[in-house]
Length: 164
Image (cartoon, rainbow, N blue to C red; front, top):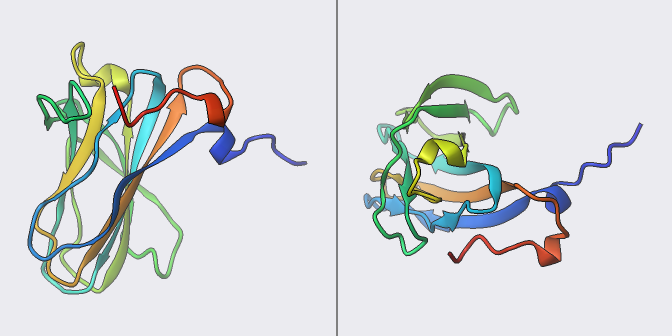
């Protein structure tokens, strides 16, 4: 039996950060608005070419996509990861937390997924982004947001998430 679910028709997909080389600098994603979101996921792909770069992934919240008043999330969220995405497609649910620290052994293809409920951001925060601490030179990171809209609408007419 065929399913009627279609990811691009049922969820909004927004680039969080284009592929970037770590080079020892903190990576900061774009921010999106969750004003019209039921739920969102931050999906991060990290290629660790070198051993010893235990990157800390930190979901952030803000009051505007600028990002005005950005600060770390304070409510633990669901987290999944796959620390060997080149050889397996198994996602492992991790202990809910406000951050996730990746593996320090490479080379590895990592997938990290944070599930964000806008209610957990607090009454004045409605935007999210993330940071990744100092990936090593030669390591690559990219990410996207997957947003489950609060109200059903056509993809072409759905409210934008990249502006307030």
